Image (cartoon, rainbow, N blue to C red):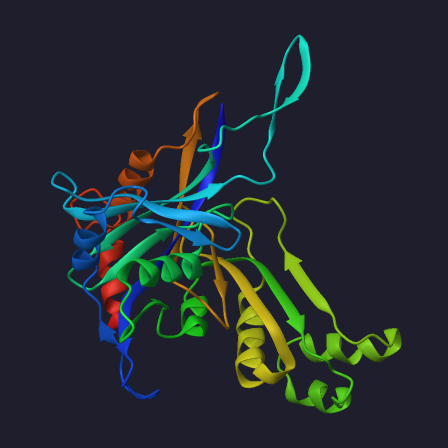
Amino acid sequence: MSYRKVRFEYYQVVYKKREDGPHERDRLFDLLLWMDQTTKRSLEGRTYDYLQEQARLETAYWDEELGFSFLHFVRLRDTNIPSTARASAGVEPLELEDDEFIGEEVSALYDENNHVLMLQRNKFSLGPEGIEDYLNLAWNNENETIYLRPIAPPNAFELARRAAEYRKINIRFADLRQVNAGTLRERFRSPLGQIIGSFDQYQGLNAQVVITVGNTRNASLDEETINDTLIDIEENRELFTKAEIARKDDDDSKVELIDLFAHKAHDFGTFRMERRESLSHFAIAKEMWDIYSATEGCNNRQRDINHYLR
C-alpha cells in the first residue's frame, strides 16, 4: 500500500477591464457564468493549445450533496510517453492512437460566495498560470482579463511566531559581497550574524542554510533563537532571497511549511493509492470538501480563507 500527498492552494478569481488603471482594485469574477458558458461546448470545442500540447475542461458541475461547484481540468500530453513492461517480457513503448493522449488531471473547488478557487497542484498538469491562461482562452473577451490572485495570510511572520514547535528553517542569502559582516554581527539578534561573518573565509557569492530537528518526534528548534531569527529576517529582507520555516501548532497537528516572503494559503491531503489505479477526481473533490467546508466534522478552512480576504 502506498500513499500520495497532494497540495491544495487558494486563489480568488478576479478580473480587470481594459480601461482599468494599474492601481484600481480587482473586480470579482463570476466563475459560475464562465462554467455555464464553457460546458455548453463539446469536448473538442473547449480544447485549446497549451504550450506545445493541449488542455481542456473535462467537466464542471454543482455537487448537490457537497454544496460546492467543482471543476476538472486535463492537460493532454503526447510527448515523453512512458513505456509498459511485463513480468515475463521486456519493456515496450506505449503506442498512442492519433486521437489518444496521456491525460494529466487537476481538480478545483469553487466557493461562489467569496469567489475562492481551491486548486489542486500537480506538477505534470496545469498550474495556476496554466489555469489562468485557459480561463481567458475560453472566456475570449478582449475587454476583460481573468486573474487568479493568491490568497495569503495577512502576515506570514506573525503566523510563524504563533507556532508551538519549529521543525526546520531554510534560509538562502543574497549576494553578500558588499555587506559589512562586522556590522551585521552587531545588528543581528540571532546567530545569522555569525554565520554571515564566516562567509568571507569561503570567498563565495551565495549560501543556503538548512537547520532541522531531523526525524525526532515532538522535537523543536529553540523558540527564542527562532524568534530572534524571524526578527532579523523581517528587518533585513534585502539580505535574503528565500526564507522558509516548518512549524506545528501542537503535537497533533500537521507540519506546515511557511514561505515568509511569498506565503500562499495552502493545505495538504493524503490519499491511499491502490495498485493499478489512478487518483480519481471525485476522491480529490471529497478531500477538498473535507478540508474546506464549514460543515460539522470538517476542518472549516473556509473560515480562515474568508478571514484572510477581509
